[in-house]
Length: 538
Ligand code: ATP
Ligand code: MN
Image (cartoon, rainbow, N blue to C red; front, side, top):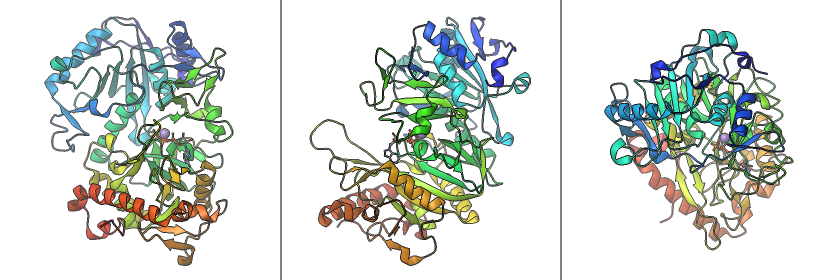
């Protein structure tokens, strides 16, 4: 049991304009689990974890994410399609409406921290309409002890009202759902969506502004773990590329699966206190640690249960984005507190649905900068039968939707750190091999793990030039051999058995890279520009 379960403290919500006392403060995970079932808002799975449906939204809604344009943010935010401005006046009005709505509801309130590094800790109060959303906050944020709770003063507030529907024409939103950050009032206001990911990514986005702007800490959309010798590995990657899967490694201590900060003292700390894993096709055999974390205290989202409460992880009838959240202590091998040092290796994970990038390659510092700014992965087009074309998707810093500052700010900080620390950077394709999506197959998790282990154990010819082949199109260094991986798997071209088709597809991708990078060219020096692919289609 966690210490915060013993809480006897009471609070008032008057300062938020919530005048009633019909709220529960700092309930234990067990109580929230029970209340969720009692209210008919969830089912108990045979694994012990509760299962809920998040409703209309089963994923984040980036087009409905706004930032209030005010004295703090006006000159600093990289405004555009990603960081969409919202006026102070409209925010104040909408906030009051949401509060009026919450004044009629039974509420669940929880105090928590973000950031495992004490110096950078952010205290957060989360006010939820639903008990399971509050349980999510228990799982995902850092849990204060009873003593810490005594002196707790909330700095940021998350106001989460999934049942509140905005009226776009009156409220200035795009549609009925919204997630709005206000840096002056220090509020993340979320309405019209029950997707829990909005809660954690709201605070993440706030930290991605605060930490580099005021504390010289580099925030990263990455997972991290520590080896026996104390070396830290970092895994950057967009959604679905393997951050959670690959950082959860029985032989290394997990620091965190999604959000970290890199300090001037070169420690790497988790922002969170839990993990949020995809569970599509999850199996006990392939991912025993994550499977084992699905027990009482965990929350399954949008999965389908049969009458006996058995979870069918292959059922995607609600969404492909089925998830489970669990407190980090559900994993056996964890780093406590969630702080690592001595960063030795950085992995950029990409799920290349064209199947043309090598499954593992080593990047020069210039290539690392180029790929970090590009942030490539691919989205697979609809799952309907027939012709399927993968769509290249570029998201700068491997996390553009959460990065309020101009990407070069983060890229410069990372480049500097990589140089100072002499870090090795690897590009890992966890996507397709033997052909594009529809023809080839997804890289076997077993092989990706073997490649990463080879790097981390120092078995991958780090210093011998002969051990690598320079890829003629991408210019990256492709290892010729890797323990635990069939040699032919290491060369994407070899797995295709059709050179012409391979090169044609590779050029399609390099052209997409070039097209995407144009907007960053003014910010990139000659060296970084040369870190891109070497050949393009004519
Ligand atoms: P998010 O940012 O949305 O949390 P993530 O980067 O943490 O995404 P994961 O949750 O690790 O992504 O998802 C990777 C998915 O791909 C998992 O379902 C995993 O089982 C599957 N997978 C299949 N093959 C591989 C592979 N070779 N490497 C990594 N993951 C793989
Ligand atoms: Mn993840």
